[in-house]
Length: 99
Image 1 (cartoon, rainbow, N blue to C red):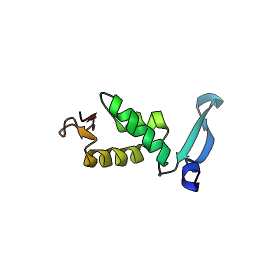
Image 2 (spheres, rainbow, N blue to C red):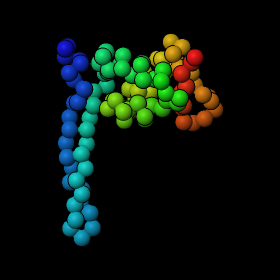
Image 3 (cartoon, one colour):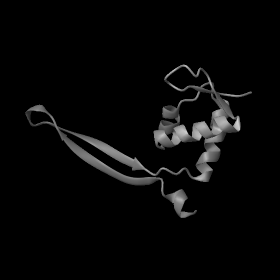
Image 4 (cartoon, rainbow, N blue to C red):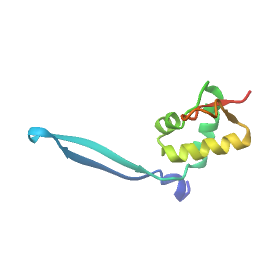
């Protein structure tokens, strides 16, 4: 494995948020690397062809990557002709695989 493939998780931290009346809430903050490893990109390509609709947030949650990185990847796949934009007038970009 190269250094980029191992470098998915940049930093993980737990924050304590103060709430009313002395209560605290813990949330975990995870910063991820902006690069996608080659083996993960191959897995994303396989899963895209099986889906009916593709959203950048769905990819980010499923494969644990940044949403901005998923958007760039989807735009790249659209230029390659692997997927197409469902309706360009919508604010939410929904992609569908080309058959």
